[in-house]
Image 1 (tube, rainbow, N blue to C red):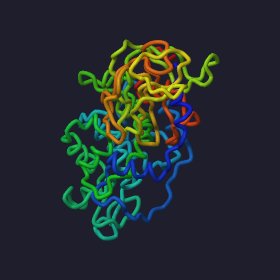
Image 2: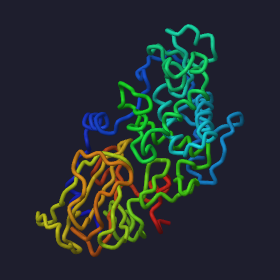
Image 3: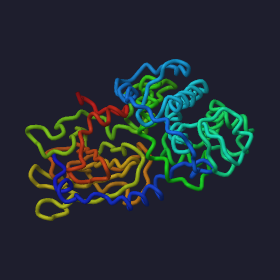
Image 4: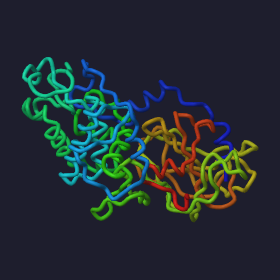
Length: 391
């Protein structure tokens, strides 16, 4: 059933300042040694969005990246930058790094250098080597702004070398495929500014999809990249997973239920609910019903109102997911950091509900109100974590 009061009373958009502090202290994000470089660069922005189209075409089979052929174009980056992105992905493929690593590597380089191979005014030898811009951040060089401990000047100005060094450290980070991109990247780079990278994760996923046949929509299962199969705790390279395995019943804002701001996924009472992506818990409580009662420990009924026991989670990019009608108090608390796929509660029928199911919502722009709600079906499908029977 509908999320009820949670969809009516929780309408205050989260303020930008709050989100900034949330993402700073919570979703730790990577920056390499020297992250706030001052760049003196020429504009290389592209003028087409072919890459965005390719990224939405579908998934699989994952294809090897051709770094010398024609590449997709993105309005955010020029041809040279996308060529560097292709090199980063190709190195990851050659090393056998799962596609989640390609997304993390791209997001890192996007923040560090805007995907440009940067020389440095403080390292004169770098200016004599091929480069696409000049920075002045300590003695950092290249796509990942790596300092001398990463290699010689010539090595750090070679995109393939810098990508390889990044991946070599990445795969040594414990549970790196499940943890937030920010946390993992920070452990690789050891940055003083671990709060600027989450904003690149979505575009990095789209670029990986366009370059490698939808690879960001895959999940590693028995050593193979499987498309659109992220559920039961498996995490897609995009960083997302389906909250439960079950069939979608009532859809998003249907003709019969125009105010239904999410989808209902059928499942047995007690089925574990997993958070769809890494994030920070905003709300975990009992939602009052239409009469102001907080009676979430008993099954609800149609017309009662309220979301029952529910959880809201803030994710990178300003996305918020909501999970309603849990059978008992959620397993998480406000301000808690949760990795993708962590169990946050169990399916129930509390609140405005006619039977056990998960009411699942996705919101944009940090807006928990109905104004921010979007259809979860295409959103989750694009991230390789489709909801069953969603077509």
